Length: 290
Image 1 (tube, helix red, strand yellow):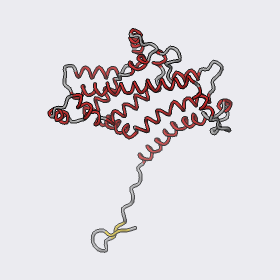
Image 2 (image 1 turned 90 degrees about the horizontal axis):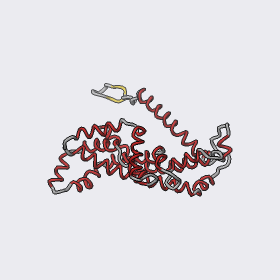
Image 3 (image 1 turned 180 degrees about the vertical axis):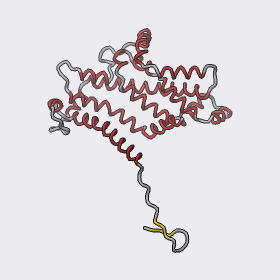
Image 4 (image 1 turned 180 degrees about the horizontal axis):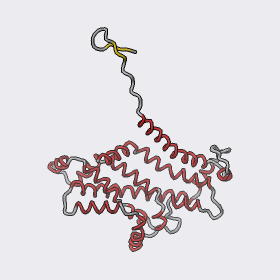
C-alpha cells in the first residue's frame, strides 16, 4: 500500500505498523510463565478434590479423576467441625478487616492532615514496626492478651490483629496526596472532623481502602500462627487450624478431603478479590505513585 505526500507525483511508502519491542515480548512471556506457575497448582488442587483417596496417592500423575467424587464436598460440609471452622474464619477475618480499615484511616488522616508535636517521630515509629517480624513480638503480645483474659476468645483473635502499622502507613500515603484546600473549605462551611471523615475522606479514599481491605482479609484468612497460640479446643478454631488438623490425621491423611477443604477455603478470598479488583488495582497504583 502506498500513499501520496506533498506535491503531485511524489509518492512515499505507507507507514508500517510498529512492531512490539523485545522488552514487551520478554515481559509478556514472563507474565504468562508466572501465571502458569500459579494456576497449575490451583488446577491440581481443584481436580484432586474430586478424586478418591487411592487416586491421590498413586505415583502416576493423572490430572482427571476416573470417577468424579462430588460427594467429597458433601462429606466435608457434613462435618460439623468444618462448618464451625468456616464460621470462625468469617467472623475473625471480617472483624479484623473492618477494625483495620477504621483504625488505619483515622490514624492515617491524623498523620497526613494534622500538625502536632512529634508527628515525624510517630511516623518513624510505625515504619520501625514494619521492620520487626511478628515472631519477635509474638510472646509479649501473647502475655498481654493473657493478662486481659482473652485466651480462647474472639477478642484474643481479633484485637491484636485489628491494628496494622502497614495499614496506617498505607492510608497515610493515600490521604497525603489529597489537597488540603478541600478540607479547609469543608471546615469553613462548618463541617466537623467526623463529617469530613465520613463524607469527604472515605469516598475519596475508597480505592485505597479496598486495596487495604483485600490485603488484610487475605492475611487474616490465611493466618495460622496466632490462632495456634490463642485458641484452645475446637470451638474457636479457624480454617487454617482445621486444615492443619486434617493434614495430620491420626489414622492417615485423606488427601482428597484435604484438597476439598482447601478449595472451599480459597473461595471467599477469590470472591472478595473479584468483587473489589478494580478498586484494588487503583488503590495500589495510588500508593505506588505516592
